[in-house]
Every structure is written in C-alpha cells, then in structure tokens.
Length: 312
Image (cartoon, rainbow, N blue to C red):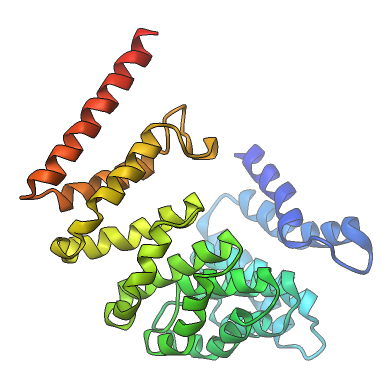
C-alpha cells in the first residue's frame, strides 16, 4: 500500500503543476507535496476512523478559511481545490468549495481551468443549481481558438450539463463535428451522445451528422459514434437497416487488422469495438435474413482466424 501512495504522490505534482511561473517546477512540486502529500501520508498513517474524521475536519476548516480569504490567489485556489477533491473522495462534505471550483474554471489560466473543470465534474450533478453558473464559461470556451479550452468545455459537457441549457451550446457543438482536429470531433460526438441520453428530442434533427461521424477518417471519431447508434438502434432498429452494410464493412476492417495497433488488446484487433459492432448487428439482424447472413459470414471468418492462430 505504501508503494502505491508514494507513486501517487510522485505523479500528482507533474499532473497539476506543469509550467508554473515563480520558483520553477521544483518549487511548485515542493509546495504541492508539502500540502497534499502531508495530508495523504497523515491519513494513511492513522489507525482508526475517528482519527481520520478529526484530521479531515481540521483540513476542511483550514481550506474553508483559505478559499474564503480575499488574498487567496488562483494558484493557491487550484492547490486547495485538489485537496478538496481528495477530501470529497473520502466521503466528507466540501460543499463550501463548489462555488470556488466554478470560479476557478471561469477565471484561471489553462492549468487552473483544468483543475476547476475537473472539480466541477466531480463535485456537482446534472441537477445542481450551481451548474447554471458554468454555462457562460462553457459557451466562451467552445468559441475559443485554443484547442485545450475547447477540449475542456466538451469534456465537461459530456459528463455533466443542465438539460435546459442544451440549446445554448448545441449549435456550437454541431460546428465542432466539422473541426480539422480529430480530438475535437471525437469529443463533440461524445457530447452529443450525452445529449441523446438526457434529451433525445433535442438532437433528432442532426442524425445525418451522426452518419458522417460514422464514416469519419479517424477511428476514434467513428468508434465514438457507435455509442449513439447502439442507443438509437435499440429504440428503433427498423430506421437503421440501411446502415447494416456499413457496420459489416467496419467490422471486416477491424477483424482484418486495418485499424492502428493502438486499438489492439493482446494482439486482438479492437475487441471492445468488435463487441459494440456485434451488438448493433444483433439488433439489426433480428427478423432480418440479410443481416443474419452477413453476421454468420463474420463468425465463420473469425473462427477460421482463431483456429489458424492456435495452430501456429
């Protein structure tokens, strides 16, 4: 257990304190480790739940005073937010810091916004009243020319976003489906998938764009679109029978090893993608002779390849 704690403490400064001005990376790392590190080590050294509660309450009291102080800088707020996240992970209430997480996402630099968005996504739920305060920030970041800001906004949308505010960001996300960077297109598809889960009627008009995502040149974008299709086909398989051939073609490419090796798992070509496609084809093939024939061809081809590998 101690080895895991030490590795975690070694990795955290590099995650949250990159490229910090004033004192250099080593000073930032020391500052970070001295606060969060001492808290983690202190908790792991305790022998009872009562001692943990006492230590965490002391930490929360200190953090509450720090985040409420007018002299607290955004850099200090970022460090406080990481400690608040840790306290909440242990099951203790840190709700006094929720509004400060939103402010950090609104006002901070890239690294501070990153921590702010992370804290918001961990602290709040979709129905939380404070989440409405983040909508303007998300809209602004979606319109940013900085790819990192756009990615952060799309990520938080795909995790938590108020249903009633979807119309405010939907046109911006639709535009991102045509973005030149594949990571933006991929995150835009996942954001639309989130919208389809919580408010399917609001994304009915862009189904044709989902089809373009299915044919995207980037495998990640295509794979992300399968989540939406699996959901929609479960609801109405008859409306997507014409896509059976496309799904089979994708499956053949996967099985044939046409995807980048990054998608392989223990030499198996994209196994989770294969499972997703088989689920889709299973729904499309129900009471459909043509789809069933295509599936059987896949099963036979896969079985032959497995037998060949075992014989080698």
